[in-house]
Length: 143
Image (tube, rainbow, N blue to C red; front, side, top):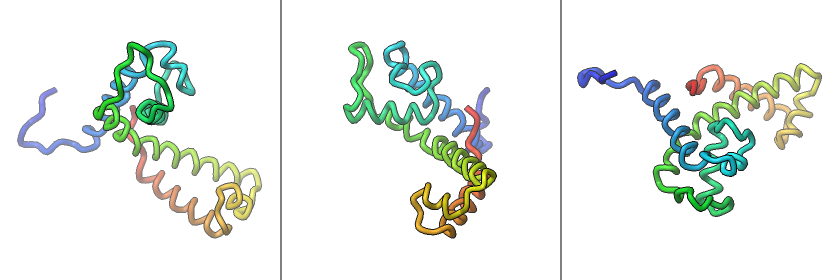
């Protein structure tokens, strides 16, 4: 598909393409072998949060590179940064769903606040309100 130079690019489509390219790049460079994939939570599918974690651990020296694995470069770091909004969106969705499940199982807002490390039940309710607003409007693109 060629791009019409007189039509502005679709930012969502461009972002989805970058997300896919970021996952593919990190998987190819740092999750290509069984040993490399064993550093992940799920050894067969590299998810956004795993890709970010992997690049962070390798770049910091916390995880060791295989002898044939390339050094983490600036493009790897940029690829990981590209995935941050997607991973944050997934975490927001997980947290909102978990808060709903907690309420459905009878936990009070005070108990939820304690679990989240918040000082008041009002803070927990406000957090849920913010999360549910973001989840409803900021759905991450499919990858």
